[in-house]
Length: 157
Figure 1 (cartoon, rainbow, N blue to C red):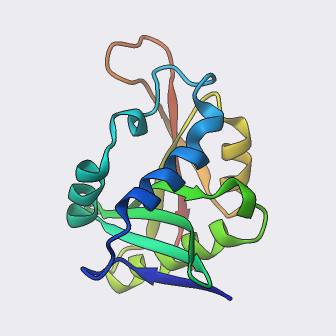
Figure 2: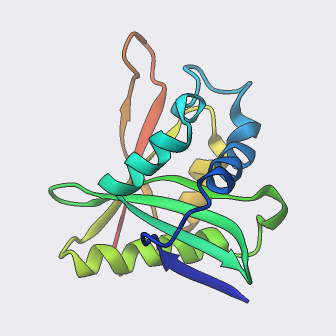
């Protein structure tokens, strides 16, 4: 049974969360430049991120299968580090996590969700497009003179 819940102080399996993120993002290691910021993450950095942002977790029974971080911006809710265990992808978990972010945005009085994805990850752009996100901007990481990422937004229903 799939369940979605917000992080609470009772959550303690940071190693499992880090492993989930690493497994979910491993496919992009050879594809994106600059490398994902996830490569600099450890348990302490995850804990700090969860204190600053809202961490939403997806469980299949007792197994952690997905997560997303949400951060309130002035006009939208930024979602990042959306990750699903590769063995659980294609089951609608990402849609459920994005829906939980939409609900959170409504609760915070925000009308849009925003995210960034790498320019190389066309499949991610297509996936989010199917969820109602549209490209709103292009950007470059510090030190790069080419487009490295795109910003996408969707209206909260």
